[in-house]
Length: 121
Image 1: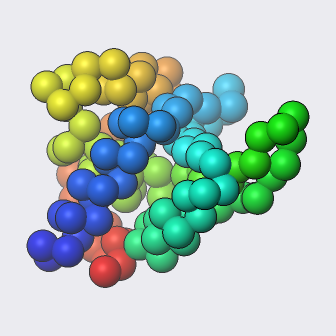
Image 2 (image 1 turned 90 degrees about the vertical axis):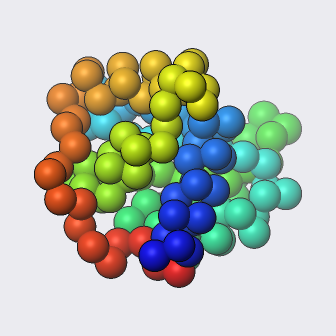
């Protein structure tokens, strides 16, 4: 259980620093785009949060990056409870507001009981 909390903390920290909370007009999505130098981090995210998906590497306009995206039931059932608990205005008001705006726009609500076993250690 402690490893799950550490994993959640790492993911929340990365998302508040470099994540995008938005959507495509139909469904909410969280996107993380970073330089290919961070490939080990993307592999770690893919291992510990397997409901998202890593895309790339991309080489476009002189930029070289990977992109991780989470949407659908995985976003709703696994990530929303984690972010609701850890991504607070006290921690980062700007990121928390972007997250809340996404939740409102796409009508995401925290389920009463998050799914178990969705975060691997």
